[in-house]
Length: 88
Image (cartoon, rainbow, N blue to C red; front, side, top):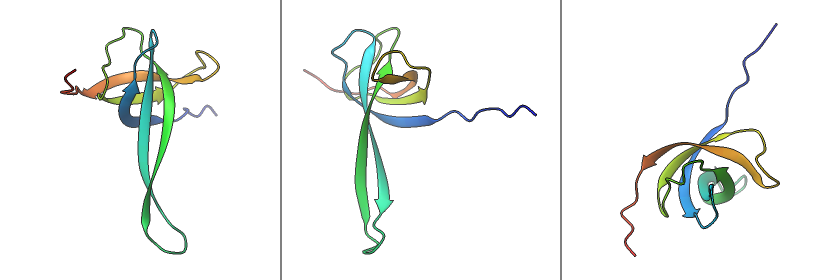
């Protein structure tokens, strides 16, 4: 039986695009504290492959888990959901 592997797709904000073909994406989630039942923000920063260097700082992007591109880069840019209105 062949089962199709489920792709992990996450949405986050671009916090760095200084390196060539690489972006750093901050992914925020809310988790519930087991004792106090309060929701807490937790965040993870992942490095993603941006082949065409089309992301800017502050863009809302969707990334998908992919084969390793390097030591720390295991995600690939799927799409830019919303462009930022960030002005230098």
